[in-house]
View 1 (cartoon, rainbow over the protein chains, first blue to last red):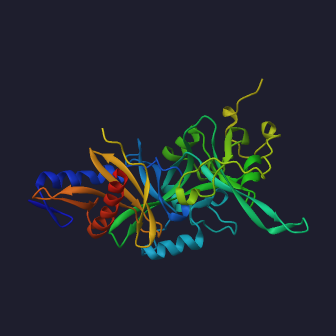
View 2 (view 1 turned 45 degrees about the horizontal axis):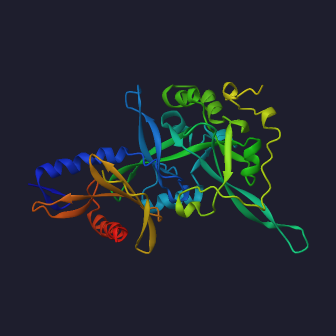
View 3 (view 1 turned 60 degrees about the vertical axis):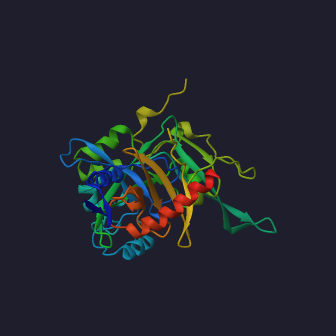
Length: 279
Length: 82
């Protein structure tokens, strides 16, 4: 007879319950529609196996926590203060002031890929005052943005295995890279004009499995996907609560301008071979 | 074959927590995601020495929470059957 979690169970049941730990740990929970970063919810990431010859899918909390953080409470304060959901691809190894970036060690040793089926960003439209003037206050219109004809795509990630002292367990935490927005994303994420760095399959492999130089890694991290490869639609504002992005029309909202997407020029467009040439 | 429950919500300690079910190694597994930043809790139903059923966490270590949350999940599923 054995005990599992303080309960008396048979040996067979003990083995079965114990045997669930690993598959549960590796279960990807990809059936969740929207990951709200501010809940530090688990998301699916790919990390290389120890021998570096293969990779495995595992879970990580979205919101990077460095090793020096001691407690869960400190971790949440750290994440709220520094918003480590994303890393600036321009600062992968060196900060604006020329000092070593806090991401440098992870960029060298703990790169991963974050799997995404779509992101949600809000477009901010100024409210109109009584005299018809634009006010500082804005109305948010959330959009879901994904890739045409691709169920999932890869974002360059940096992860850290953090020891949660309250449970004695290691927890993966992750941040993904962001870069300057393209033409469409500049209109959608118009408050910051940034977007996730979305990688081609070849670049995703290089980021995860190979040993590129710092310069090359910085170049990969800054990848800008062309507007023409994106699909997007407005979604219901309740997505943070429901964790589902439900398409919805906002009749008062002007359409996104796509006039120039086919002639768009981006400094870090590494998707040239993937753009469909129109006849 | 029994269908996996679509994601649903329970009210636990004053907050709304999301529950996602999965079938792993023929077991019903529930992952509970908390909004207050606490680590997600994964639970299942174990069978005691006298065949009595009990909620338990996977991995071990969070038995009390497993029992509290498990009761809420069971109540939710029962209420759907009525």
